[in-house]
Image (cartoon, rainbow, N blue to C red; front, side, top):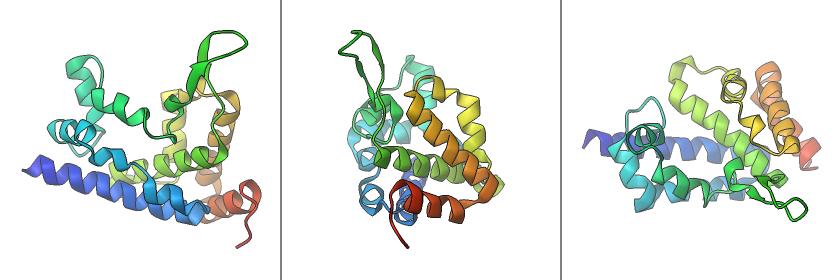
Length: 178
């Protein structure tokens, strides 16, 4: 029962934070619909089974099975994950990353910031999303332009904070005045 409510609390807190960040960034709809698939049986049941509270349950499912069914379900339905944006090139026929649309790249930034806050708890600083980005080397699997923008945003967050980063996103990337 503790894992059930712990997992439910964790994913709900994460969604609330992402929603708040998306509103601040000027993409409210993405915050409203963010990660709804986490409540589906395909993701929720393994989430409860592998819940620990200090890292994603998909990591433990992956250790046990050699892959994570929940993660494969999740990344295939949520366009804010760069893994969603893999396809075969019509020019080369090779499988690789596709440039993500701006709105989903911004949502990915909001998602990473929220995940850092949820898992780091009181130890969170605005440097954590940048450290995670560098540690995971995920930029090697992203389209170069997507990776460059995400790195620019997590660096700006680390150097200048949330308010200035969200203002930059609204003003410079989305062209919204506020």
